[in-house]
Length: 456
Ligand SMILES: Cc1ncc(COP(=O)(O)O)c(C=O)c1O
Image 1 (cartoon, rainbow, N blue to C red):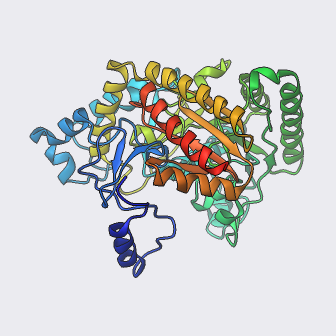
Image 2 (cartoon, rainbow, N blue to C red):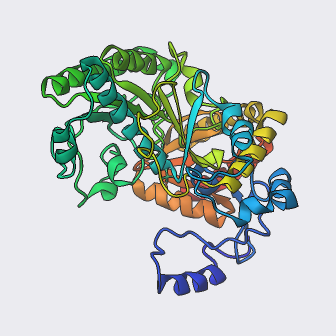
Image 3 (cartoon, helix red, strand yellow):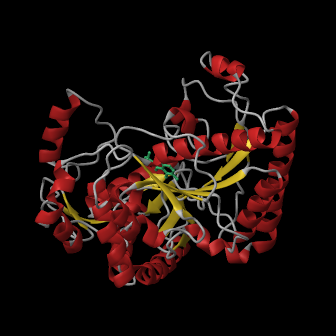
């Protein structure tokens, strides 16, 4: 490290940026040319171990050769130069790019995929899919088509054309910041405040004790309490004529504070959804690869695949996988100008090849074991840390206060380890999939030196 972070050059650039944009979220300016592998280099020449991973979205580290190679190939240049409207005029390579990227890692049983523009956009359009599906089934069962009254009333945002239907999400959930998704997001008031919202139901997400394996009995009771409430909510909202058509859940609540639930919880949730005719949607925007499984829900032993799985971040492209039969009844119901970006599919294709070729899921499991064991040792030594937890390298530890969280994060930055928080007082680790056990040890050493300074 050459300076504290942000250093003088970052501060100068922050000053210039602040004249035209919000800067309160910016940690530093980065030299992306010099950044390499798991190390990010800032404009002041500081080299930091990156455990933040661009908010959990960096897949292989910086300037990974296979990705650079794919983008440097002159044959691929047209995919970078031209930005097609994929719903109208996709490039010749589109289907094969989908096959070598998204479809080569699709969750079992989900062979339909739509591409989108960001994680929120993937969730937003997926809940529309759920509404379209519900109404289509209703019309098919009644043997009727869309009525004139529906067509007219929807133009006034009124029933029956804009029907009373709902989506259930959980306390602490984060599903994005677009207008529809905000009604599902329940992590922090600052995201939602002042924005009109749908009156949709919220169920409690289990507040489990860690380590999970030592608290199974109490945790099971807590999960049963939450599941009972889900069942009650489904009934109450159906009786109110605003049925829940989709249950939306993260496999591990991320922004809300790295909150885990057991396979049992997700199995039961899926069953409740199925019994009441709602779709079961798993938001895997933050969890691709990083738990040591391609998809975090693979660890849950579900009866069948979820109906919809959304993705973004580490896949480099965003969108949703869904079951056959969920495709909307008419074209243009799920649509926008770009519907993604084929040059990013090129990147995704290179990335998934490397994950499979180099067994990166296995490496993530190994690095995760080192990280979690190290966090547990540190929490035993420093009582202001607690609840070390994780799956793969998706690890976290709680601090005793929000103030402590902020001061540890800043001290880590100044000592060359870059990560961010989540929830109210959690430090979360979100390294790339090329993060190895030795990187984990480097992080733990830096963390230990920060902690020992703070405890004096
Ligand atoms: C689980 C989850 N869903 C949705 C989103 C929203 O994704 P984006 O920021 O790409 O819109 C995020 C972002 O952090 C997320 O973690």
